[in-house]
Image 1 (cartoon, helix red, strand yellow):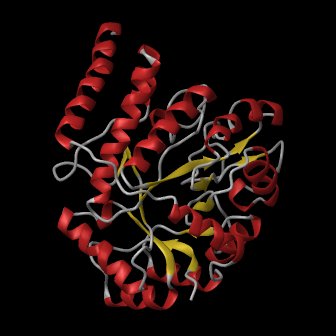
Image 2 (tube, rainbow, N blue to C red):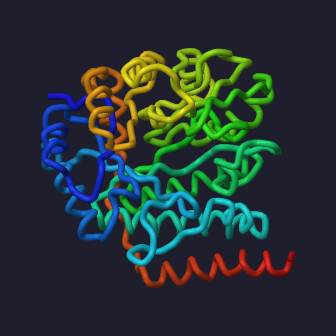
Amino acid sequence: MAANAFITGLSGHALTANERAFLRDADPWGLILFARNVDTPAQVLALVHSFRDAVGRADAPVLIDQEGGRVARLRPPHWPAYPAGAAFARLYDIDAALGLRAARRGARLIANDLAALGITVDCLPLADVPVSGSDKIIGDRAYGTTPDKVAAIAAAVAEGLMEGGVLPVLKHLPGHGRATVDSHKGLPVVTADRATLEKTDFAAFRPLAHLPMGMTAHVVFAAIDPVAPATTSVTMVREVIRGMIRFDGLLMSDDISMGALSGTLAERSRASLAAGCDVVLHCNGDLAEMAEVALSVPPLIGEAARRADAALAARRAPSDLDVAAARAEFAAMLAKDAGAQVSSA
């Protein structure tokens, strides 16, 4: 029997009895973890196992946002701290090859952390291209301000994750860099013309169209669809994400409980799927909201199921890694960024 077309959150460190029953009956395709779900390595591993046991699928994907910098659900003392994406952009400016090696090495180490916990998907890399005056929600998470540079570093990050047995999620399609509002709080409207968008924002995603999974942006692109954000816009999904960018991987919505979207959660879920998203992402762990989403989504069948199966099949066995040596090498690379910042101060 097919899983249902949504990814759910949970409320805490362990399944409640009601959550276990919900997972058994609603059968979400995947789970996403947040800081509220994280205490110790043993606890996270147990939570992941209990989720998969509840849905009855050993390969059910478990996702997390582990970027580094501001966006990191796993933190010291149990897990290493990683830099934000801007660190790789600065290293790239010193030496492009160095920046790419550092990005790939950092992602490989993150994958090592995740794989040990049974986490199989990281919501990374970003291909968003910030511009002057945009909201800081992307900010130092970005890999630069030019599409070629962003795409190159994002590709290195994706490869590092794949080398560690973790699937990447390309975000936020087709671009969150111009947003002047944090989409967690409100609906951003981008007014740039289509030609500009295709040369910059969308261009950063095209070299990454082969990646197995992607996440939409809750952003209106007024020159293309003046009403609906990309997540719920048939035009944006078909013409831009699947068309101009040529992304053919599994497409998930960004979190549908975010402030950018309007309507009930059921309406948001149905609109996302009708626009062309394959699965709906709901993150906050509120059981009543989870139930509303579950009742509004169909089983994962047809093209959506094909993309989901292809995404999971893209996962590789981790390559060999001397973790201690890799961490030392990564630290040495980052030291060059720190040294350059001191020199320019």
